[in-house]
Length: 162
Image 1: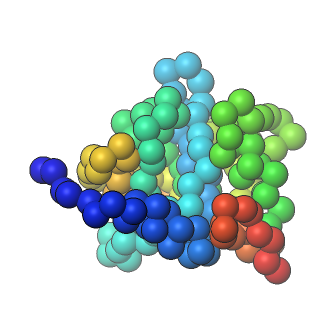
Image 2: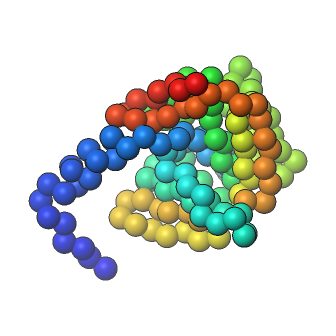
C-alpha cells in the first residue's frame, strides 16, 4: 500500500514529536552474537487483560534482532539511567557493561538491575510500517525496581525530572 505524503509533512511530523515529551526505555534481547539493545521512546501500554505493550524500532542491526526475537525485556528507565540511555541510543556506545548493572534472566534475556521496571515480553504481532516495525508484545513478567525520578525524552535530549 502506498500513501502519498504532502511535501513537508514528514518534517512537520518530526518537529511535532520532538516537542512531545515521552518516557525512555531500553529494550534488550539475546542475539546470535550476544545481547542486543537500544533506547526507545515509543513504548506504550496497549492492554491490561492480557498485559501488553507496544514499541516501534527503525531499521538497524540491533532493531532487526529485537523485532525478530522470541522474547525481550523492556526496561523503563529512571533519571539515574540518562547515561545508559545515551549509550544505547548511539552506535558504538557502551552496552552491557558490569558498571551498568546487567544480569541475565534464567530465560536468557539481559536485564538491567535497578530499572524502575523490567518487563519480560513475548511478541504477539510485528507490523512493518515504512522503515520501521511496530511490535506488540504480551508482558509475561515484571520486576519492579526502585523509584528514582523520571527520565524524559524531549526536544531530542534526555531530561531528568524528579
